[in-house]
Image (tube, rainbow, N blue to C red; front, side):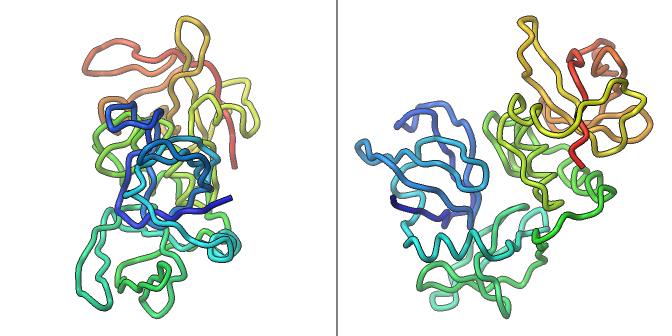
Length: 259
């Protein structure tokens, strides 16, 4: 078994070993992967935080040893809690952006350690060692308001519906699977929309009954979700009502209480 670490701001992870293949998720700075087979300049990997299998270009992550990988898994994670911030290389002075939710490996005395290299980080950080209060979920979600939709995206500069929910919950110390259909299997199901609280998740299906969309419930019968962009719409027992289109855009399937 080999292991890798994301050393760039945000990297596309593909369905197949090709730059033209569909982006299915992204690896943020400081996140780790388990590395499997190689095909040309690509490696099949599985992301450590959500066990998502995909392909990554060999130039877009670095290999680390098993000891470092295990240390990163066992130590309480610190993540960036600003929309975006800057890392400065201790030796060269080179700078690199890091985005909301990115991990900060071994952060101590304003220094992040990647292998033998150190980066200076003077921005804000958030510990994921324990769950935050449920009231924080809406605050984190609103930080991403108006972020553009991007299939497979997990950052403020492009995010999909399940990536949005996953990131919001991650900032609250709760780790969810990557896809909406997987997320729908978590938590306890509510019988009526009136039972839902701010921070609960609503799931929506297509004509075949497959869950294809997820959003997070806000107060006053509202939902925040990634559809074209991260936006706020009305929610009722039928689904999501888009005021601009004056029509329902998503059909409600179920509501889950995760925390």
